[in-house]
Length: 389
Ligand code: P1T
Image 1 (cartoon, rainbow, N blue to C red):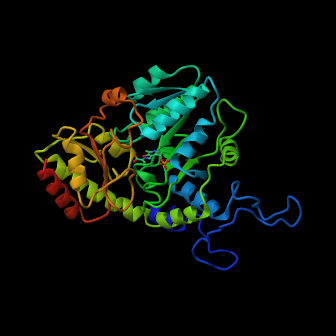
Image 2 (cartoon, rainbow, N blue to C red):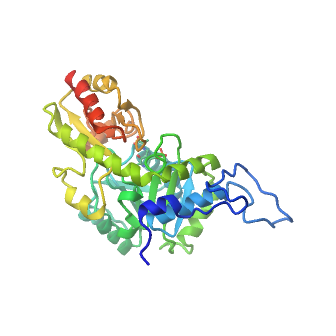
């Protein structure tokens, strides 16, 4: 039989009416602990850091959406990333793309590095990954498209190189969501999402997840699920039941939202590209994007994120951002409302200025999360504010 389409999975996967009451919506099991009939005898739940029924349903649904056998959720995207880094030991080496969320850079450079885990940040492609490999390389980590420069990285090629080396390949799939891209199907070993973004989609939850197919960890005697499940409980960065419920609720419209985000982003990107006050627009859905062909090959769409460079100097850029009415000037992305931000001052401020300059995060770079409003209204808003530059 044909497997269900994404739209169907987003509504039904992992979700059954509550066995006790028949409630159609997954109940919020707002409890920290569970009664035991005798010491160690319980119904599968003993303490909510270890497991919670609302979380269990969410994890099952996420695994189905990404095409993995397992999913684990965390209190934030960075807590999920930290659990992957906890698979490593002092003396291990990581290869990461040079362009990535500032908080991920901070975690690798200022938390993992002092613990003896070195990261090489590289402009990632097949050749540069091969050149950066060391005997102790255990993990290759990247986003595609990257945050904020929307570089498209060949997931299949990088995953193959990592596999041949006995390293894990982890892809942060936050920008495209499982609706548009499934890195596990391209050979990646782990997918991470900041669920704070598109998966929850309503800017009211901080959460992250890891999705994977269970497999042996090449350098350890444990399987990936056993080790990560142990770490989820041992480190304890788990989300609350209410937040799991909100994410479950958000996911039901993920397909509808992503489609609309993409339609709007393409219109806004094309309009910006034709505007005389705009130097360059970066959106993988535009034919002008150097990674457009690769993006079309490895993803089913291009999402709602775009970046652009207005022909303006630093003092004018914050004024332009503040002049907008519909786009809210704020960090984060992936909610139904359009957000806009200045990476150098906001989301990527934790990256040292000289490294930002090297990568291309300049003072006139603006990043935009295009929401699901009317594209015409969004363009009018940009038009009004650009007129003042
Ligand atoms: O904020 P948190 O849920 O911990 O997720 C971190 C994270 C991980 N990966 C990517 C690609 C991200 O964009 C983020 C968070 N990003 C922002 C807050 C931002 O505005 O870019």
